[in-house]
Length: 447
Image (tube, rainbow, N blue to C red; front, top):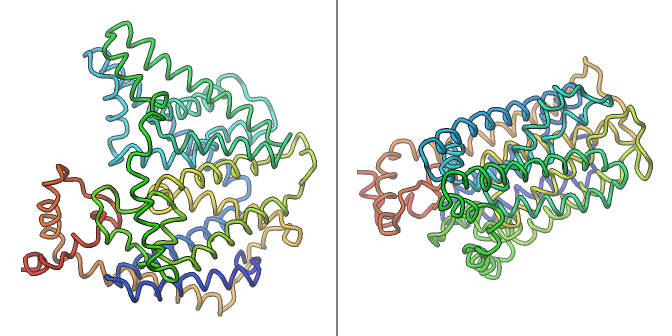
């Protein structure tokens, strides 16, 4: 259904990508880790298509499910923030501990920032899903979490999300013009409210208790972040570029940037450099063609392109486009495409956009009938993909499970000298491949 609407060229490129990955992985140091990575991205693709089909069948209900879910998440974090803030103020703790406690389920605050890049433009969805003016109590119910989401951005200081949001606003205005004004009005209202909340919670209120706490807290927010530089990313980018120069055609192997330990990160914090270094320049070229072609198709097949939307028409193209652009810009500085929580939102947003594009394309204006039955060939192809995915995941996991505890001990012992005992998540027990099966430690690990 959805796949049949794609052009033959796009289908061909989608098939060539895993083939290039397999060719690259077979020559890598740990081939099964490469197959694991390829299988996982195939699973992400199938999940994206599944989300698209759900959007096609559910219609506007899908939008409300997403909007209510994001609002509930926002309220959950807001209530937790207020409780942690009250405890910190009452006990004269550093206000920075509020954010640490609130985001303690994320091993690093930047992982939360990656999630924010996908969700920040979508937090105002409830105001866009109805053509009527909401009552004040409902408006407060929906707008307050959106404002708080901006407060968390100011407090966490994630510069990639901030830059992505700025670029997204500019490009969304450029392409959608007057149609983007309704989304932009609520988006900027939430941003202004979040900025005011940040100044109140992190600047004004702490000054009543402790000037020292006040000064230190402001220095750790978004306001002071530009002075911290690239925080080692230039070294990561240089390493990725060296890999591209050495292996331009097939790369060093999917996931194998993590095989070259640099004690900073297991990925280069740049999506383009990572694909080029691990998969090779031909694969990078295909990915760029798919992305550019997808964006151009999204803009070209817009049913009200160049016109003004009717007042009673719900238009979610501007916020979804803004969410995509925000995440894409952030992916030039962070691991948007490989971190699990970010991948969940990536699947949801891309699937949502594909579903809308399918319904609003000139030759696909109606949803399929409830009795739609996929062909036997399509079912066999789906079973084949799932078998490939399961085989790619089962083999390395079966090798790892018997030695998991000892492998962790070896990894921690090797990292004591770097003053860290964190297990860096890159599938998913720790970030680097070499320390997981170190050549000089295999005997010790497996004994």
